[in-house]
Amino acid sequence: MPKIVSSSTVSASAEFITGAEKALHVYYCHYCGEYVLIVDKRLHKLPRRRTDNASIISDKRTFKLNLKRGPTKIIKRAAGYERQSRWSCPRCDLPVAYDQDSGPVYIFDGAVHGGTSAQGSDESKRQVLGESKVEDNRPAQVQMTAEQLLREAERSRERAISTGTRRILADMDEWRPSLGPIPTSDSSAFELWSYKAEVGAALLKYGLHSDLDFVRTLLTIASKLTLFRGTVVHVDEQNLKGSWLTLRYVKPVLHVGVRDVKGLSLQTPLTIFYVHGGGYCFGTPLMYQSQLLQLLRDLKESYGIAAQIFCVKYPLSPEVPFPGAIDSVIAAYNALLAHGFDPSKVILGGDSAGGGLVLNVLQHLRSTAPSKLPLCANLISPFVNQQATALSMVANEPYDFLSRRTILDMARRYRNIATFPAPDDPALAEPRTSPINGDVHGLPPLLVTVGTKEIFLDDVNALVSKCQQSGVIVELDVGEGMIHNYPLLEQT
Image (cartoon, rainbow, N blue to C red; front, side, top):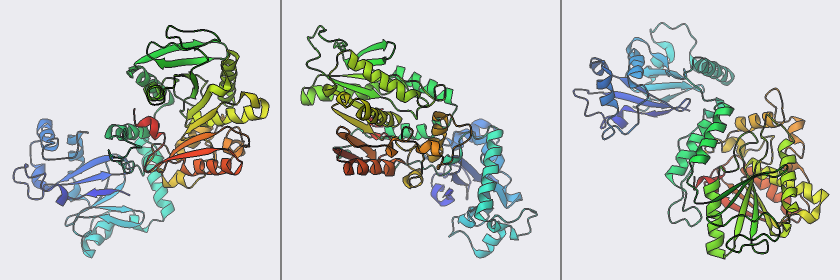
């Protein structure tokens, strides 16, 4: 629902506008994220030079909102509010009306919203809703059913996308700037969560709806720009592709009996086999290199454990659809053990889709080679159910940077489905596609991490409950108010 920032809110901020009694109304359109200004007649008489308008609007000392996006264009578009009582957001065509007494009023979901004086008088409401003398042959928006409203919104969105004025998709409609409560600095569990992390998550919400190649390029560039104070050794064997991460000056141990300059051997280190996330469609082995390096430091400094991490590289969809990623990760794990690594000193870890792949690997090893099962596994916000039917998919969508539409789109690419899949598509319920539907008996101990504001919350809780009922040792780490992949986003 659109949110109004009334004229009373900005009246003090508009004092620097000379001679403006009722300077402006501002509303923030939650449908597309646009700020729209409605200024009074006196302000319209100001010079139309862009520099003058920009100086009025972008004075951050008095006007707190960031209104840099095309201020001149928006002012000119809003200039005709006196000639019509109903108009639309200039970016997404959300129906908006202007009441001379109470300010902008929204006609949405069959009700009147907004207005600065208790939403205006009944008479002003009737005027705003089309019962005035304003010539308008369109039916009043309040007379539309909810179905018609949704259809109208969809048509508006399609028009905006086709004209290039709006590139974000349907699941952005309820996006909120806040991703839930940010933990305070005295919270020992989330001391690293910050405004920077929240902004990064907000940008992900928009970025994930861009072109797939663009997202891949962006993530690759971001991983290369990360400051990494450690050692990276790339591996490109037939079945073992990826990168080793160790602390600086400590080379990874690849073969039995091989010792590096520090004397580290296979008898001492702990090896973490890490599978990155990215919805099976994007992501790189080194996308979380700084976070994984911090893990190595913590293990070394706090517990005296010398560890090394292998970040596996697996093929992405849709170029290599299901089950290409699963087979590749299983082959890489077997190749690692073939180098002489003891599975009792190996930990499997993965985030999001990587967590789902880790569960696939564990289920495969339990059925085919139980002796190769690792010491334990760590699943960070695992993507284990591609049907996207859980209640949290809808309830937490306004807070998380993922959405139900995003999940189903990833599932479509992963399973090579031509059309947008239905949640009850039998292909999505297949145990290798949605490992939550597979057998979990006999799995090694699991550490599972989830945030209370992420869309996977219900699926992760269901997985933990199923594992506990099957006799698997499970520790659930819940981040209160946190979103998807929050342990990795904290340090991004």
